[in-house]
Structure formats: structure tokens, C-alpha cells
Amino acid sequence: MKNFLIFLILLNFFWIDPGHTRPFRPIRAEKGMVVSADSIASRVGVNILQQGGNAIDAAIATAFTLAVTYPTAGNIGGGGFMIIRDSSKRVYALDYRETAPAKATKNMYLDSTGKVIKDASIRGYLAAGVPGTVCGMWEAHKKFGTLKWAEILKPAIRLAANGFALDEYKARIFNAFKQEFQQFPATAQIFVNPDGPFTKGYLFKQTDLARTLKRIARLGVKGFYSGPLAEKIAKDMQSHGGLISLKDLKSYRCKWRTPIQIDYRHYAIYTMPPPSSGGVVLAEILNTLEGFHLHRLGHNSSNMIRLWVETERYAYADRAFWLGDADFVTMPLNVLLSKEYGRKLRCKLHYFNAGVSDSIHPSLPNFKEKDQTTHFSIVDQWGNAVSNTFTLNGSFGSMVVVPGTGVLLNNEMDDFSIKPGQPNSYGLLGGYANAIQPGKRMLSSMTPAVVTHHDSLFMVLGSPGGAKIITTVAQVISNIIDYRMNIRQAIEAPRFHFQWKPDSLVLEYNRFNSDTIHNLLNAGYAILYDKYMGYVQGILIENRSSSITGWSDPRSNGRAIGY
Ligand code: DON
Image (tube, rainbow, N blue to C red):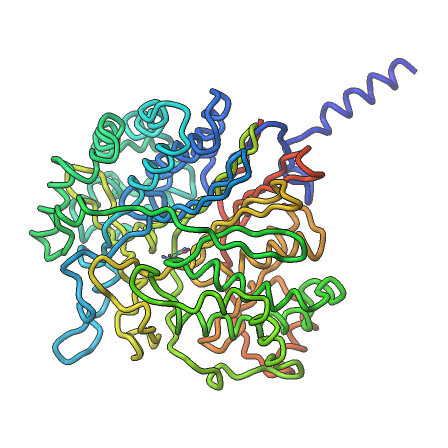
């Protein structure tokens, strides 16, 4: 009997594993959790929580660490959005999106004959918008931070100065981009190994970046936007045909915006308003789908997918036509966000066969798939929550590192419609509302979200994925609310995507059964397959605040760490 008891105790002891070893169990924690796309960054964030910092302190530490350890997307030369729900249950939306430089013009990416100049908005100095990340982190800290700014930056500085060991994934990515890096000597100096390909375990140091971070730690936001660092950026821009000036840097401002609140089956979802399209498109999708008993259709059955696709056809068409930077264009948000509009869309949907995107007007599409962005979700012991998505746009952004600074610049300008109303070099079209104007923010799809239920914190999530971000976030939310999945199941479930144009349904490669595919083809859908369907980093509070559960999308290489 005694032996049996010991056996039970031991069994119990080993049973509490971190979750990775058993199917469909998420990571659990009691006090706080950080889920990010990089395990070093998640660890740094959790250390901050354990030192007594709140979720916002942890978010800032995680973000600066990602700029060091996950340079494909983590950044100080890019921008993003942060949703914060504080312990007093108020929700805030922080916009630190990049802006177009003052010298930017509507046709800056067109040649004299009006043709799009290949790659001009994607690679090199002209592709970069005025970075917003340092301003965003500073603003968040000013309003909510409890630990000292300089303390919070210490781990990132240490990792840049002393280096960290590359894992296989990072070594492979750096090696894959070697040719692109070589076009920019300062970039190649950091990301190309002169002694041959990087391998797992290589100690990767970034001394210039460490110096830059030390400056930001000492001087705060001014350390980045004025003084020698800003001068270096402006000078390098000038000598390479870029547009960002010292004045652009000095006048950059991040902004607190009113979050969009979407009520979906008694849950409240808080997310970004324009200049991200995420909130509006998510609202249109969920407001329309709310009228259907989704749970009665099988999860990911052809009938369920068709309802989603037909809804997304309208939501993404509206995105293309109406949405842009709220400071520059007027948008009918009251209509687009209303339940009434969802009802109207329900009446228009094609139920028996595939709709036709060309029949939807107004119609000026603007979609592009990009490679890299990154999201992290954090909750702390006091109930503060941070949902942050930030980006350089493409992997390693413009590929430009400003010499002597370690700062990798974004290529966010490509999110503008570089040629409104006309197909660009990729055969894509652009919308008027998102045309380039000096100081304007380019339209985004980033959808950091915080969900509450009966006024209690319920979920924190977000994803990279370009246009797929919104459908990814929507599906994970629905998996949890409509299909009662836990956070791991909801994130791991196969995903699909539709964005009006191109008029093709994208299914996650190798994850849908042949019956479903057959039914969809029969209904008239053109089907494409893709392996890349976003990387969700999510936290779910189970049983009304008693248990924090989290999961990092296995499609990426991240980690949920709690304590
Ligand atoms: O703001 C946006 O919507 C894009 N710049 C995001 C790009 C992205 O998600 C790429 N990631 N995979």
C-alpha cells in the first residue's frame, strides 16, 4: 500500500510536465506568462515579471530583446501596435506605426513612364518609414511602467554585447539571406559570417546595437530620435538616396487611440483601429458570423469554411476601399463596425456556391503577403495584459543596417498603395485611402487583441502573417468561443484564409481532408495551399481567472513560459 502511494505521488510529480510532451495540453502558470516567438525573449520577459515588474515592463523588455535575438522581425527600426488592459480593466491602444517621411510622394515608387520600380518599396533606403518602436516602448513605460527604464533594457543590452548562441533555426535564416545582406556592407558585417555559414551554437554578438541600446537606456526616447544616433540615420539616408531626415525623426509621435471593441457572443474583443485594418476587418467577420450557429457545423467542415470565405470576401473588399490612416482619411467606421452591417452582409452572402470577388464594389484591393512580423502576449499577477504585434514588414525589413548603429530599418513603405487603382509589379492593386502622403501611416493588418468575458480577462493573442493576420486571429477566437477548444488546440487547428482578391481560398497545406476539399471545389472555389498561415502567440485564462494557460504556435519556433 505504501509503495503504491509513493508510486501515485511520483506519477503525479512527473505528470505535471510543461505540456510539450503531451498532445493538446497548453502550458499552465499561476502568476504570469510571456508567450513570444523566441524563447530567449520569453525568458527575459518572465524574469522581469519575477523581479516584480508588471506586464508592461515585461513587454518592453521582451520587445527590446526580440530586436537583438529575433532580428527577422523584432526591431527598434520598425513599428507596431500594443493593446494594454490594465488591472483596473481599462483598455488602451498604442499606435507606434511608422510614418512616411516628409519628402515622400504619392508616386515615389514609379518611374517616369508611371511603371512601378521593381523592389524600390521593398529593399534599400527608400523602403523605410520613420521608425516608431522606441517611441512606442517609451510611451508605454511612461504611462504604465513600474521598473526603471534602464533596468528593463539591461537584458537586451547584455545579449547584444555578450552575444547569444544561435539555434539551428536562426543560423539557417541568416544563411538563407546571405545574398541580400551582401548588398549592404553594414548589414553583411553583422549577419554574414566571413568564416562560412553560421551553425548552431555560434556566439552571435552585435556590438554596435549594444551601444545604441545603451544610449536609449540612458537617454530614453530622445536617445533614438535626436542626437548622434538620429544624425547617423539621417546622414546615411541622405548619402544613399533615402528620405528620412533628422526632422522626420524628431517630429515622429506615437499615438494613443481608442481601441475597437467587438462584442461577439457575450465576449468583448479589444483590438486596433486604423491605421491597422485588423480591428475593422475582424469586426466585420465576427459580426457577420455571429448570426450563424457555427458550432453546429463541423469545425473546418466545407460548410463552415464557405460561410467564413463569403464573409471575408466582403470584409477584405471594404478594407481595400475604405481603410487608411485615420489622421488623413475619413472612414465610415460607424457603419463598418455595426451589428446592422453584419446583418446586411449576411443577406448578401452566397450560400450555395462560391461568390465572385469581381462582383463586389467598391473595389480597389491592396494585399501583399509579407514574411515577417512578430507578436507576443503577456499577463502578470495583477491582471495587466499586453498584446503586442510589431514588425519590420519583410524579413529583416529593408535589409539596411545604418552603419555604426546596428539598427536594421523596416520596409514598411511597401504597405502603402504604391500605385493607387493600378496593378503593381506583382499584379496587385492599391486603394486611394492608403496612398502615400508625407507623415501618413501605411495601412496595416496587425491585430493584437485582448478578449474579456463578463468583464474578466479571458484571452490575449495576435499573429504575424500579412493579410492572413486577421483571419488567423479570427479563427483562433472562434475556435475557443464557438468550439470550446483550449488555447493549444485552438492555435494548432488547421487554418484557411480568404481575402477577396485574389479570388482563391488558401488552405493550410496538407491539413484538410479530401472530402472537405472536394466539397469546396464542387462549390466553385479556386483552392491554393500554403504552409505559412501565421504564428499565433496566445494566452487563455481558464475557469475565470484561476488558471493562466498559454501556447506558442508550433508553426514557429517560440515558447510560452509562465511561473
Ligand atoms: O502591417 C502589416 O500588416 C504588415 N507590415 C505585416 C507584415 C507581416 O505580418 C509579415 N509577417 N509575416
